[in-house]
Amino acid sequence: MESYIYPIVIFVGMGLIFGVLLTVISKVFAVETDPRTEQITESLPSANCGACGYAGCADYADAIVNKGAPMNACLPGGAAAAAAIGRIMGVEVAAAEKKIPVVHCSGDCEAMQQKFEFDGVQTCASAKRFYGGTGACMHGCLGLGDCAAVCEQSCISVKNGLAVICTEECISCGRCAKVCPNGLIELRSEKKKVDVRCSSKDMGAAAVKACKNSCIACSKCVKACKFGAIRIVEAHAVIDYDKCVSCGLCAKECPRGCIVNLRKPVVKAETAAAVQKTE
Image 1 (spheres, rainbow, N blue to C red):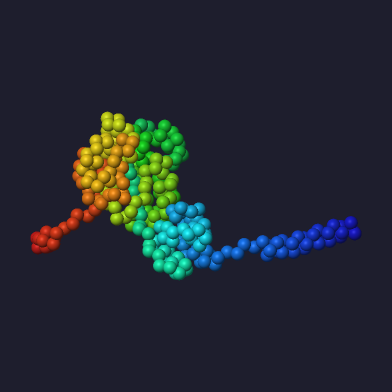
Image 2 (tube, rainbow, N blue to C red):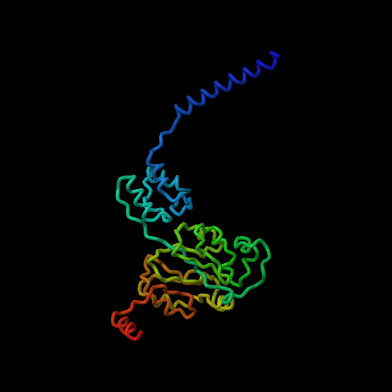
């Protein structure tokens, strides 16, 4: 009987000793944390999307308190999160400009030629590995909805083989941009209204053959822009949103219609009154 009791007593004793040692060590080597870090973490939307440039909400909160990170970098949290962080840190914080995702492609099923049918795993990432995808343009939307799958707001859908984003419901987390294999989605300021809806890197005739809506790098948009905001990069037009004033001149000059101007036309008071009178 004693042969069983002694080992049990020894193990229990060792457990108590190690427990006490661990408690003492945890107290001695405890790292004090600023209570503001936890408060800021709780004020964030817990999206952990990385749009702020940090690994997650907790990492971002720590960076604000200890590294001087910008307090308005949380795009999903918007003005509410910026104001809450400002109150915790004791300063006034202006909300960052809202950004919305834009799909730089207009190659839907009607516009883009198809090379073959893909019967593998129905994801954009898988299709991309198989000869660059089913479309004749290897740089266009793959249309299998990887962006829609990662969107927690369900504001992305695939219509006629092309990703379509409902920007009103978007929280600017940027997950869709990160997951797109062809890098077609970009976050831009909500105030900018002109977008190039093509990312083709094919030249001239090859681009036209692959997609009816492709950019042919004719440079008419470049010549039309008075602000130097648009240039040709890798055979397609690219807008510098820091210079763009959304005048829409490039969209008017584009012979392929791959530049769109989302700015609502300004209606003069006289014109509006005339329209109301006729109604």
